[in-house]
Amino acid sequence: MPATLEVVCTDDDCELDMFELHYTYDMPDDVGVADFVCPYCREGTPLEAIEL
Image (cartoon, rainbow, N blue to C red):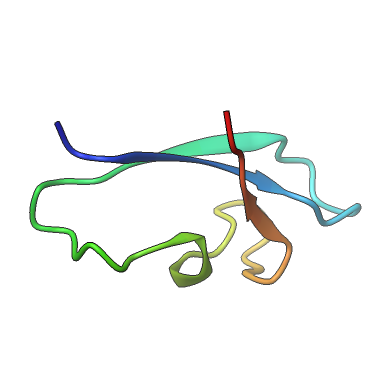
């Protein structure tokens, strides 16, 4: 099953709480949270993976 990644935006000015990324089998294994930006505020640095 392809990986999923739950992400939180920690920017205090951003209204987005969290979101989930669903990968396909074609996604490289080394892709991580640093490769994405928040879909709401468009910032990448405040993103953090949620560890369950």
